[in-house]
Image (cartoon, rainbow, N blue to C red; front, side):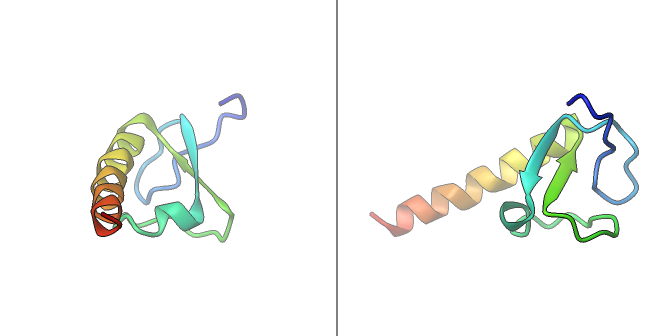
Amino acid sequence: MSHNKICSVKDCDDAAVKTVSRDKFSVVNMELKGGAGRKIYLCKKHYKEYKKARKKIDRLERWRWM
């Protein structure tokens, strides 16, 4: 990211690497800093945690449709 944004997860001050929509992020149990923006900025560590949690949820959703 070129804007030098900071991670939106509470108690994290690392540089953001990825952005995620608030709707998709609401499923993951991570506490966010204040603010009501539409995008969530995530550092490398928290993006990895988000991907793992999202992968489990997506897998369950796919099984539901089988």
